[in-house]
Length: 280
Image (cartoon, rainbow, N blue to C red; front, top):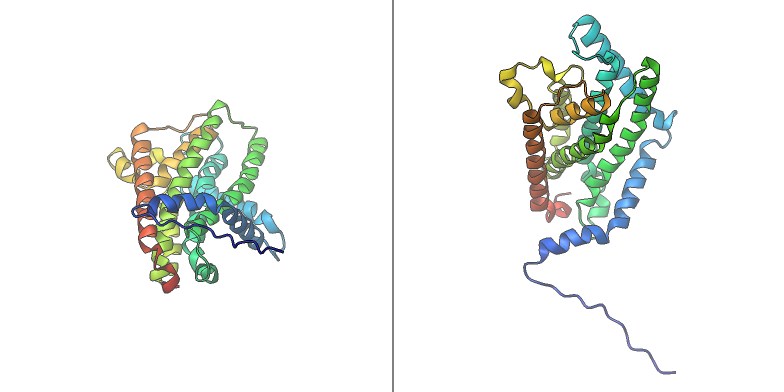
């Protein structure tokens, strides 16, 4: 019997094609992206008493506390016809998505150290997978928003069709900040203690428990540098029948800030990516 010749795969290394091949590899390794995302979803609620209901209970309790503190105690007016609880929760949805993505992405590479040190794949897949996992939590949390609509007999109108646009805006803001902190956390491990502080501080400078309308005019553009501001205002505009004032100057600043952080995050991540295996 005649022996068949061995088949070899031809590997061509082209000068100056590193970036192009890297982004193509993200598509080639799309199955790994799916596997990591699904693994994170299963692990998050494994051996928990009530499972995915935590994605509803946590924002529900936070919404109740914020409504009592800002509406009943501080008596900060919402300036909207919508019930205060719905106004708060409409702002809390994107904030929970952003903060969870930031916290999970920042430690994602450390948590996958064994995988990173053994095989090659675009490391960008790992923090991106955690953002997708946070998006699943967002979908579950959105169920409570539907319940609030029924409870208060207050329903959205056509403005809700623009919600995916602001959700995409939220993805960009989450990915940018998440990638930057992820890269830094690999080299400087004390960043894992700083991230919770950043999240806590961001909660108070973002319009989660209050309406952006209470911010003095002279501080509005500086306030809008926070990319989450535009996301939250957009969510409220979409979910509250357009009652939320949607200022284009504020949106423009927040959008620009989100895109800048996205560029900065990808740049920092790619700059440090080659050293991840050694640093971890």
